[in-house]
Every structure is written in structure tokens, then in C-alpha cells.
Length: 149
Image (cartoon, rainbow, N blue to C red; front, side, top):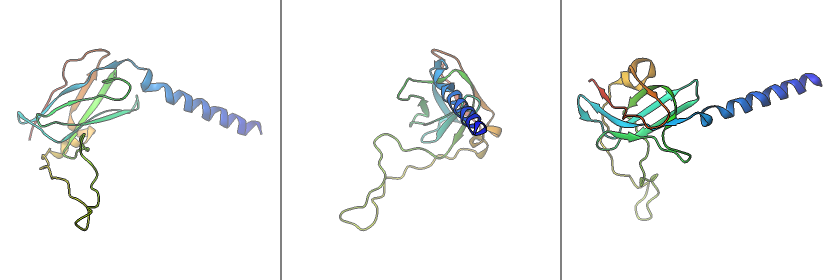
């Protein structure tokens, strides 16, 4: 019986230790602009990831290639070093909805299509993107990235 109790106590301690990580770190502002050969990259997704801290945050680039990380608790990300990726796929933007069934026509209502921006494949993987950011606590200068075709 004491063997099971030890396993339960160790599991609970590991769970509690894992829950305190990123939320307790000081945060820094994270915003910037992504361009491809000097031109704004619109509608793509930028991801900042730090596996050791347990953070992977994404943002969709606006029409001018700009992004900012905001969340319900506070703006920015925990202070740490991040690997950065950029991919053609995007998340839904505010105001967009999941297609619903049309009451008049049969089948789903198709949302307006946005032309996907072609991002070279190497930027979609942390191992090959070559992009990184050092987020410090407090206000940071913009993290701008100019991708090469």
C-alpha cells in the first residue's frame, strides 16, 4: 500500500511543479513585423516556441505583416529565448466564423477566401528556420523578421 501512496505523492508533486513554470516568469512585450524579400507577409502565422519553459504561442500576421502576442492574463510572453517559425497557414481572425449551414442554399456557407501567402518551407520548422528571439522582461523592441525566398 505504501508503494502506491509513494507513486501518488510523486505524481502530485510533479504535477504541481509543472503547473507553476511559465505563469510565474516575468513577461516581456512581443510584437513585430514579418516581411518576405522586403514586402509585408499577410495572413501567415508566426510561432514563438520554448519547450523548456512550456510555451508555444502563435499569431496571425495582419495585412501589413504585423503581429503582437496578447492573452487574457497579460501581454507578451515569459522572458526566455524562443525559436521562431513562420508558415503559410493561418488561424481565424477576429470576426471570422466557422461556416454554418445556409437556410436558403443547401450545404455550408463558404467564407470569403484569402489568397494564401507562399512562405518557403524552411521557415515552418524550428530546426531550419534560423529565426530566434530573446524576450526580456518588460518592454522589448519589435522582433522583425525579413524572410528570404
